[in-house]
Image (cartoon, rainbow, N blue to C red):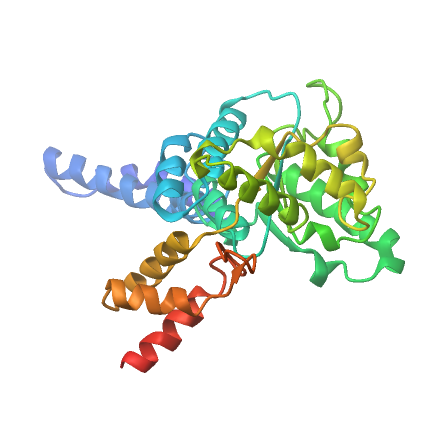
Length: 342
């Protein structure tokens, strides 16, 4: 009804103005003014909706983000050359493909504090304008949302509906599963139909453009051992390759119950890329400390960086080369050290 009145006003306003005793120029300007105001009132709600309500298109979703992502990873992620080299390539290729053959499935494996969650956050920020706050991004804390094995059938239905509803609204939906190694056995298999290869016309909902990231500490011990051997052999850390560890991660997943244990996702090669996060060494710990100090406005000196690094426990016991907690506790250690300094 409101729209009808507005349209009638647009049509009738010129006649009203024409009847008034005005000059031709004034009359024309008045007509244009009324039309602009009324049309603006008519379309303003739509314009507001388009610009301020999140959608699944530009500028809310940014498919062309490869260069920016690589730059950010190189600047903010320390000691993870496999991550900075691999993720921009595989993610960029998937997002630029208007008709991929399947959903992109990534598995981030590594010990505590190596940057798995941090990198996932960066990815979300580079694909979606609202980052982790986007309606199209789902950060699923497994131990919080699916804590009980006996309820696995209920969880399956919840997870199935969550994925279906999100992809229906936005085909580019991003799903991040934290602590995959603690997921109830069998739950993740409910995702297989959405992650596997499908022809373009396979169903009403197209899951092929979506992205799934699985975060797991599983494989961390194998990664640590492989990197340590690599270094003891006199090789540079930067020469360590994904192929040096993929098989060991795969075997460790099968040896342990929970998470991807006996999962059809592994057995059927649904996971596209297993990306190992390497253990952090003392220089990387100091880089994390430097970034935290700068963010908090503290001075950065070698003395302070060494004090923070000294607060971290290292392993193995004989050479103490890797941080036991990665960079996870760095912020608290910085606060502790700077509290003493202040």
